[in-house]
Image 1 (cartoon, rainbow, N blue to C red):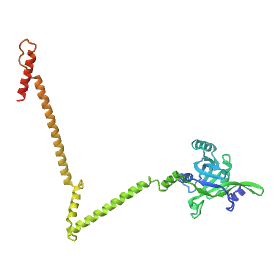
Image 2 (image 1 turned 60 degrees about the vertical axis):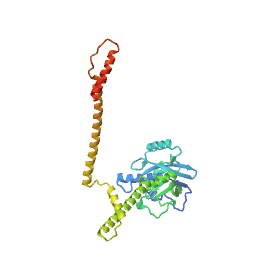
Image 3 (image 1 turned 120 degrees about the vertical axis):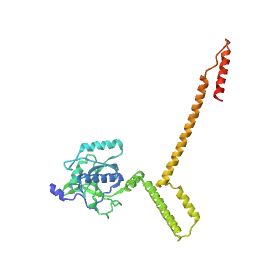
Image 4 (image 1 turned 30 degrees about the horizontal axis):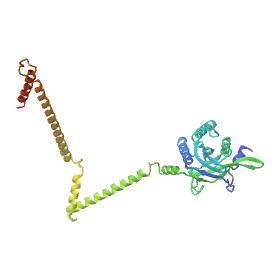
Length: 329
């Protein structure tokens, strides 16, 4: 069978053929594929760039669970997979997630073609039946289509062998899937869906603050209207209310009032000067006491006389007492 004939034959069996595979898809690979596609669009400036990656998960008989994914490197314009890169990344993920195995691969396309069959054959060495997850671009996706109970631009395919004209070839069977989420995944998806705004608590706090400011503004306008009408005589004057308003205004900061600022600065300087003078007075008092003590200790004594051992002490005591009396008269 020539390559042209292979391209003309459909590689997906009719929808009447069921897969019978129980497939569960987690949100993380969906987000990874979407991010991969968006990044490649920006890098290549193409609406439909070539995207290729591996799917990791667990398989127990016909029950398959896709948990994670990672990107793959390609060669020859996307015709072949960089096997060394695939093996290295797979082993690295195996060290971190020992329970996850290579389940299949993903790409972005309108539908599987013969090119995808050629890529599929390169993954058989890692899994006997590698699954294919195709993300369909939004421009080619019908929003009314239900996939696995979810309106997602994704389709899953299971590989199989078709015998036609006594010849066998690889084809795909569309498999239904369901989205499975854990508690941590639901929180992460909810945060991502809200644009990563830092959580709903911040939004609620800001909304509360906005409502409080709006209420305060409305009440201030109401008070201004009442005072204007009271001055104009169209409203009855309530002296208790007016006194409360006057006290409220007096308690408000008047930093924008130039007269208030000048008066405040003057009082502030007076207080600072008073504190400075008090400190000087206290320092002068301490210095005066030190001078007095120095004079008492160094003042001249009376001439010492006599040879008694106790005489000098008596004269010394009397001399200190005389100095003390002289300096404190």
